[in-house]
Length: 288
Image (cartoon, rainbow, N blue to C red; front, side, top):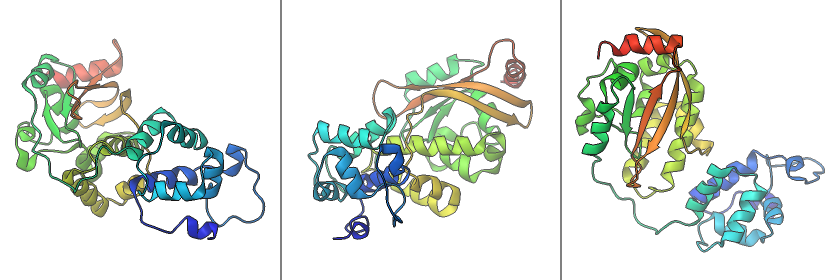
């Protein structure tokens, strides 16, 4: 069988797509392979990855097509090393290669904000904070978080399942939110990579498929990013805003993952003490 057909035959799985996307981003020179002549495929060929990882092409093909679900730690680690994966990508590879069980897609029960998490949000006062569900539904926000990120929406919307805002829908489909982020392209890429990371844990949830389908149809930018298979565990960083009421802010964000392990997390925003951003944030939250 030719290398070209080896790269295109058989069913497509999430694991296969992820491995293919990581192969495509590497050049032979980056992994110490000498390439001769014209190459038909971008990046590494499947047999080149198999050689680097020390597995057969047949086994790698079966793994990509979901026909082998008992890959050892040694094989997964070898693939991660060969593909130069970072820590988040390695964790994602393990989640895809070791699905807990294979089930038909199911619809989970509607998520609700825990009383303790919601009390914590409101106790933060001038610190803008949100409680996000596993697929970025906004389950709750404090007044400062609402004013910073979605003051054009009804404050009570997170409590209503019917019109509950979703951070990804806002980011890709809401013009106010797009204008709010000075580095929108970076924010969008990080949000999709974060969803990819979470998706491997909840792959059987029909709500995930519905959200991805809706955004893919309505946003070419989301569809392109989702097809890229980048993954990131979002924990901390900085965001730059262009707020319609108080102007430009640069804020530090922290993501606090709740101990229940259900995918819910608290997103907080703070400014450097004494900075212009801190003054702007105080001005904004003074109305809260």
